[in-house]
Length: 147
Image 1 (cartoon, rainbow, N blue to C red):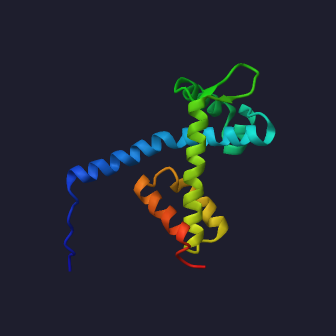
Image 2 (cartoon, rainbow, N blue to C red):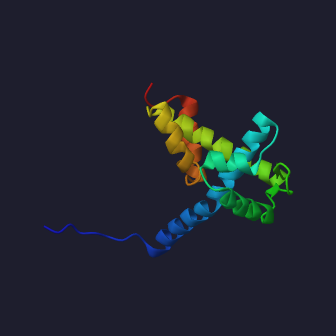
């Protein structure tokens, strides 16, 4: 027996895919500025070698990404010096950290284990819409879900 399938409205589907493409484009930048901010807060500086180690990528990959972040006005780099966030970069780091916290808290409230929630939140924070994020935050503030 063949199940009848229906496609979503093409415009709505295109808009959904566009939102996902936009999220993918900012995902790496958000991860980098957040880690740079964390490294500065903990170590007093962020270095390319530290980023390469923590992301598990080559130094060349980090340098390429840092060049893009510098072009986008998120970081300032100088040869043989630490990496610094611009005001825009720090704002992005703060917002990314806030989104991560909300998703993580939501996953914990609904009963996801700590390790899995941390891992899942790392990817979800970049893709969840502001509307969904607001609902997550409302649910966690009310303490709904599993205990």
